[in-house]
Amino acid sequence: MNKKTFRLFANCKLVKGASLATICDLHRGKVYSVPLSLAEFLEKTKNEDTLEGIDFFSSEDQETVLEYIDFLQENELGFWTDEPERFPELNMQWKSPEHINNSIIEMDQLDQRDLKKITTALTSLLCKFVELRFYKTINLDKLDFFAKNCSDSVIRSITVFIPYTSSFNIKDIESLSVKYPRIVLFVLHSVKEKDISSKSENPKIKFISKSINNQSHCGIIDPKLFSIKIPVFTESLKFNSCLNKKLGIDNEGNIKNCPSMSQSYGNIKTDDIEEVVQSKQFQKPWGIHKDLIDTCKDCEYRRVCTDCRAYVEYPENKFSKPLKCGYDPHTNQWQDWSKNPLKQEAIKYYSFHEFVKS
Image (cartoon, rainbow, N blue to C red; front, side):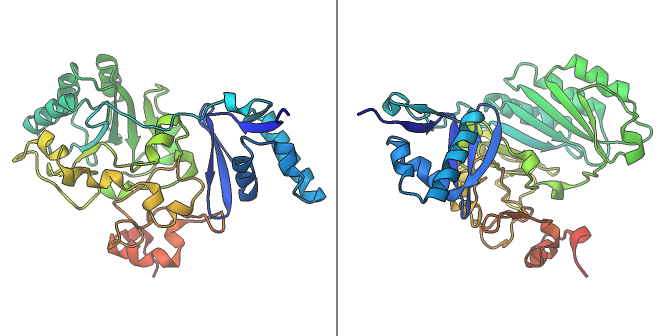
C-alpha cells in the first residue's frame, strides 16, 4: 500500500528548542516558528503515512495539524509524496579548505611592518574575509598599504570601520574602493543622526550613528543578524559560529581568537602568526558549539544565530550564554539584555559603564 507522506524539503531543516521549534529554509534564507509538537510529529512521520499518524490526534487537533501542513505546503517548505524513500536528507557535513576563514584587525596602533606580517600570514592561511577597525582616526596610507599587500591573496572582501568627522573627505575612500575592488564596504560610525541621510549614496559606504570606539561593541545577538544559509547551519553543528577559523589581531599586536577576548596566544612582533594559529591551544575554542552552551542548547535559533565568547553571563564559565543575548527559549520572549537584573554583575565585570544600573 502506498504511503501518503508529508516531507519537508531537504533544505528546510527542523530545529527543536525548549518550547518551540523552527523550520529553517536554507534556500530562501527564512526562519519559521512552529509548535514543538508539530516538529516532533513531522520527524516521526517523515517516512510513514502522515494521514494515518494524524488519526491519533483528537478531532480538534487533527484540524490544527492539517492547517499547519497546508501552511508549510503553501510556503513551499514541504510536499506530499507516495515515495518518501526517494528523497534523501541533505548532507550536513561541513568542510572548509581555509586554515583561517575570516579575520578582524584593529588598525590604530599597527605600523606597516606589522601589516606586512599580517597580510603575508593571511595569504598563506587562505583567509577570505577581513574586517579592519579604526576606532580613533583613519589613516588612508595605512589602509592603502594593507589593501595593496592583499592584491595577490585569496581574500574576497575587506570591510573597513572608520570614525566619521566633519572634516572627513568621502571622495578619498571612494577612490580607494575603486582602486581596490576587494574593499567591499566602508562603515562610517559615530555619525550624527541629522547627517546620515545627507551623505554619500555610494552603496559601498554605510553611515551609522553608533560610536564604535573600542572592542566592547562585539557580541550583539539579534534576529537581524541571523544567517540562514547551508554553510552556517552545518558549521554550527560542530563548531562555534563566531570563533571557528577566525583570527583576531588587537591594537597591541596580540594574536587572539577575537580582538575582544582577553586571552592572547602570542604577539605578531615576536611570534609567527601561522604557527600560533595552527596550535591546538588557539583552535580549542573553535569546538564550543551551540549544543554545549548554556541556554543556547535549548534554543530553536541555535543553528542560524551567531555567538560571543568574549562577553558571557558568567565569565568564569566558558560555556555560559552570550551576555548580549536577550532571548529566553523557555518563554520565547525577547527583552533588552542590558536591563536584565541577572546580567548586572557581568555588565559590571566587563566595565560596560553605559549599561550599569544605579
